[in-house]
Length: 252
Image (cartoon, rainbow, N blue to C red; front, top):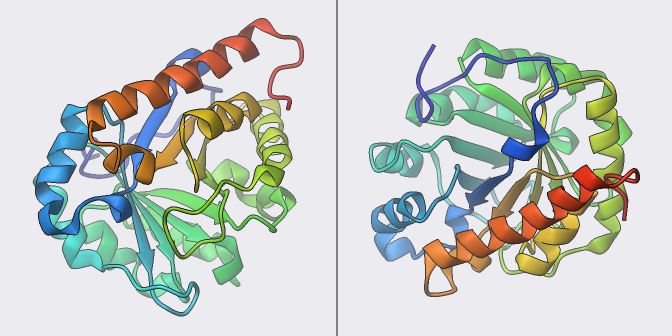
């Protein structure tokens, strides 16, 4: 079993303490590519809980980003967990290279997988945590059968492919439903929201039940990474506090 930043941590099927699981995961896609190493270091020093890598192939989504060698090059710059989000066709071909490069969580799109159970097993056998991502129009029921097999559910709040898009508010009911499904089954599954996240939309996502905010522009392009992360966390924490005090927790 490897340390955070180097592999899989032991999974618990007891529902986590919601007061302690808020996480900010800056998306490297919005970092300054001319100094990625320094940006990763600044994000960790600024209070990030994980780093998010959007891997695009130009087929599943209309953009190309970077491959496993970039992840490998940055691995020794940070001890934070690396979330590798595979926005690619045939993700089974690339699970092993990204785990060997330093990915701690490998997140695949349900829309790109014809045999999701087999791919989750493949991720687990490589010693990484398994995640599944849903596009904005994909219903949460599509992953109900694998909820007890994954560590991370990523709800896309923009159409995948490019950073800097506006948040799609119609995903909020899906986040609510996912949170109720997860808590109803007492599963320790993180819900991440990816796309258009800032202080305002992060509050809405957290109020709906997300506990991981994936933010790119709002972290790396605000001038002060530490302050940006602090403000995102403050906003999300306010929403979680409201949920804790309300009989209508995880509502809109």
